[in-house]
Length: 315
Image 1: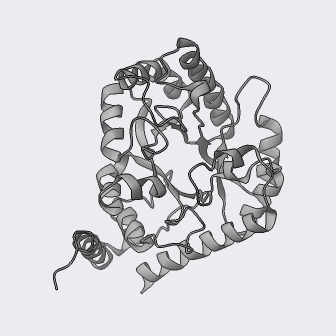
Image 2: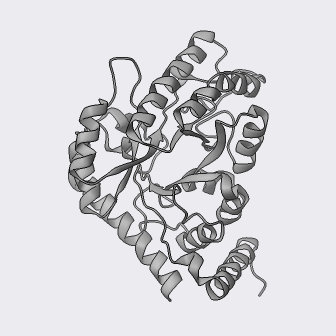
């Protein structure tokens, strides 16, 4: 019986990985760097979240970009103190884009709010030593387009912030998100076209998310290889958006593709972001979580990822 298309692509990636393993074993010595995106922890105190991650062996955190106004968000000195207490470093900041701060909006006041927000988060990311700031070209939670000029407006607005990324030494990372949640930029190809149209050195990278990729890409591993050196961070969740190991996501193929593109290099991060099933996880961002559930989610995800990684490299 002939194989299905995805099986053929899986085999191609596995064969490439096995060749890499045999001919260049040194490229597999450094393991993937694990981070964690904490905005799904809701209003839990940061110190509690950081301790949970440190206890699970996570040494990097992708901080919630919660500076929604001058009086809101993590305080630099307090945050730095909490992280230092647990030996934690910042991988980057997860920018959050809603209709209130929409780069593609047909209302100038919302595009200006997006610029103001990006400037606050860039200042914070720089202070915390983070390497990237996540950018979503249109509002999350608004899947219907305003009009057919959204792409151009988004590019024009973000280009105005481009020099700020360069000055802060922070990489702009465009995240493709499934069409059920945003109105444009759904795939790696879309992100590459957006980055090309932007044409600014401050925003040249991609933040992947396997949950969105399973809806929009023909094959996740293939898409990761297409992203190549542009990929700087990869959000991870299982197929049901739960902890890794609790769904049907093909983690082995994802891990092999990451090693093939050299994603185990310094400055690249695999960042679990399991948010639970359902169409709208974002209310949890401002809600009170159940600590035991978060404990399980972190422990399960870290253990599963490291076990599959070890099985592929050492097996």
